Image 1: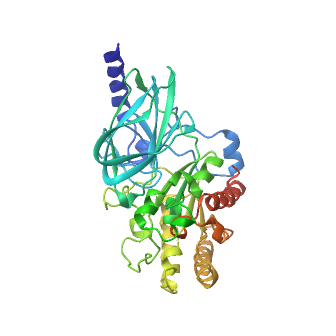
Image 2: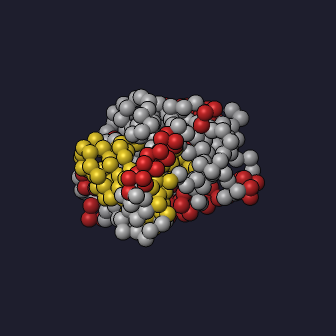
Image 3: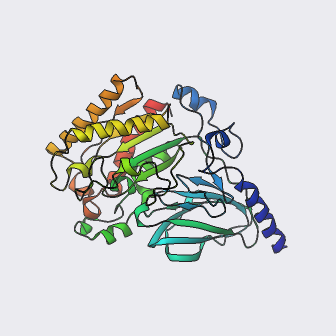
Length: 391
């Protein structure tokens, strides 16, 4: 009987491989929503007031993917950005993944039947990792999310094994998607750390990094949405934390995988909202005013997002690490960039200038936001998106 179950799982996987992938054209992937991609309820669309249709998720290797995924080889998808991963549904009592990782220690969060589980760490190279075990016989869902950010390495799903059952078609998505573009704050860098880690090394902060607990993930769950994060520590709009100008977020924004210029993402999955949280690294670390180049490059980024997502609400935010004159300077540039886009006729771009500067009791690793600060940011962002999208 076990061999029959495994053959069924293989057959289901091969059928799913033909469905969707980032290399496919929008016409091939974003057609009429069905049981694989899900549809929003009529009430949410009516309240949202002309929001784009429900985003169609990528299905490859028998699972549905969160965030950007490289399906150049659809049998072995690769993923890298913070929070990327997949959801699987199976009939059985356990599920194991064979992963190949390029980073030294990549951290993953699993959610089994809606219940968050402790993270697990994958060493460089190939390995077998139990995603769920000792479950009651029946149908279960398992979600897997990368906690380690993209510059630290890539992950490849080589196989999924259900020892005593079969992989099933993945569950549909919620029909709500938020994309967030940012830096270390958005990655959740060091957010599980404490004030004792203020002077910790980067290695220690990466080890306490949790995208699951970052503000945008918390907000998305509160809104019944999924989130696609495009973020990397130390990156800015025109210059990075160290003062260099290579690999800034606008430069890498179109990448499917963080560290590779190819393949580029095809943007066929349109979110209802895009949040941009950039500017901290452009002015912090005693670099001074980044100048009007910041505003102009921010405008160009807004234009790029609008070209790719004609109907999405675009929300600029900044915070919560900046204060004083640095905060005022960046706020001024972001507001000016938004004003320029509004004047050009784009009325669905705004600067949500309500993220408050964090206080010392909310410091985590290297002064980054701790869990309480991320929750506060999430509450503020949730309220704004609810008001503007009708969610």
